[in-house]
Image (cartoon, rainbow, N blue to C red):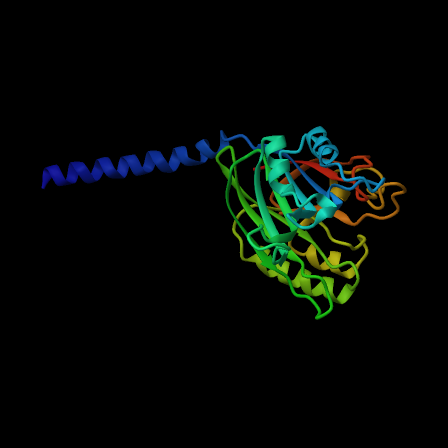
Length: 272
């Protein structure tokens, strides 16, 4: 009995020490700083309509982005992009991990060739643990859109990077897509960042809907109007980086480039 009592006392003492030290351990863990970006690359065609994926890669490289959501990315799609797997090519060129979401998925032109796909991609300097692509609601005549999610390990801290490209022709369709995204975001328990070409300006109802769960980073950390489209004469802000309320935002910038008809948005954040 004495031996049992001694063991119980030791266990209780160790539990007390762990309780005292746990908050101190968390307090000593520094925030994970990283740079997140969004860029609609128009399958690598610039304002001059010339296909130049190396130019696209140069913009991503120059942005300093650690994680970037790309829209309008071809994968063996057609001769407009030389049937290249653009996501894989950019990942190799930049030395980054990649996740791809095919929103359009067609049979190849010739049997035995890869499937023809068009959608979004996520590039990350940090390991991508897993990914999934969820097809979003659309009207019968609407183009299929999706939400690509990637779980990323940022120096021991997990986060969720979501990437989307909403319908450009219908406000009602965008609202339905936003409702689906909100449901997905509400069901996730990780700090999240959503990048995307939302095809809606900040005063649009669907932006008010999507910022019920996520914070628009530009008003917090950006300067000026933040216009991203079109690249030659920017007149509207339709490309966004949105973040969970628990993520700190330090800087937001629009990069000037002719590599696409959209301008990329780059945001510095910190995961607490």
